[in-house]
Structures are given as C-alpha cells and as structure tokens.
Length: 125
Ligand code: BTN
Image (cartoon, rainbow, N blue to C red; front, side, top):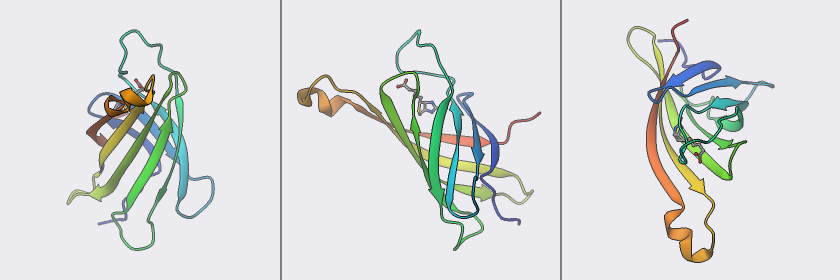
C-alpha cells in the first residue's frame, strides 16, 4: 500500500471538516478545523487554526498529534492518532482527543476535561 498522507481535506463522523497543509517538508504541519458541534448550544462556530507533528520517518502509516485552538471560545483540543491505508488504498485517521474547557476556579478543575475519539475519512466531492 502507498504511504498514508495527512495532507488535504478530512471529515469525521460528527460532520466536522479539517484541512491539513505542510508549509515546509518534514514533520510539522498546520491547518484549519471547522467543527460541526460545540459544548455549549447556540455557539457561533468559526474556522479555527491547528498545528501538529507527524512521525514521517519510521512508518508508512504515521502517528501524529495536533492542537486546535478554538477561535470562537476559550477551550483547546488535542488530537493524537494514526493514518491508516486499507487494502483498497483508502486512507483514514483513527484519533483520540482531549478537550480542555476553562474552569472558573481551581476547585472546578476536575470537570474541565472531556475525552473521546473521532474517525476521519476523505470527503466525497
Ligand atoms: C468547544 O465547544 O469548546 C469547542 C469545540 C469543540 C469541538 C469538539 S473537539 C472533539 C470533537 N470532535 C469534533 O470534530 N468536534 C468536537
């Protein structure tokens, strides 16, 4: 199978869209993320910046991590995952994430982190 390529457009099972670009060759990438969902109902969603790194040296199915700094609210998401290519050459990203919200005080720190998973695939268009 060909090397799994992070660059380009991706959609996940929530309907969120992201685009990954590589401004320079190597492990570092940037991109943009348009989430389909938010923690608070009624939030006006805007495109948000992401940056990350992949291990492109040791595997054709690289592991990676990236940070999304949400532009429309006070929270940060970290995603980690791996890019896989199946027998038909179809790419997917299997990820897990942590979402850090702002706690009003240290006493509320315990409830400020959410965890979950997302599967990203290439959009049909
Ligand atoms: C917020 O509401 O605090 C910011 C948006 C968070 C969106 C989360 S990040 C993990 C999950 N995957 C997505 O595509 N969207 C949600």
